[in-house]
Length: 110
Image 1: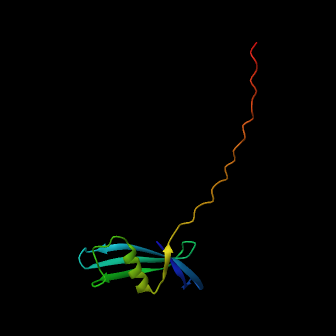
Image 2: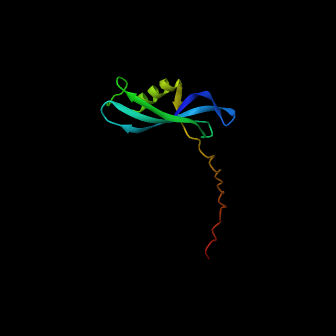
Image 3: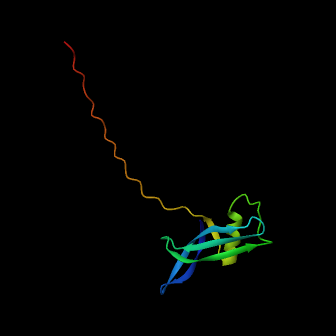
């Protein structure tokens, strides 16, 4: 998933901002074409738009070392600007309360 510059999408009667792009390869003939399924999400991970994109020669390549090339191609096809990696929110950690041990005194043996 990639963070994208916000784009306005009409969704159920309101304008909402898509800020996340997800891309999944659903078919690749390992020769000259691949089909990708894309999703555009809001910050709250609501799918605002989705569909398929077909990549073929000359854009198709089999020597990718990362998925960035596919994401960049898809963003260009969709008119989007990638701004960075998507980092999912994490829950606020629970505050750790440590008790200070009460010192004990040793009794003298008689």
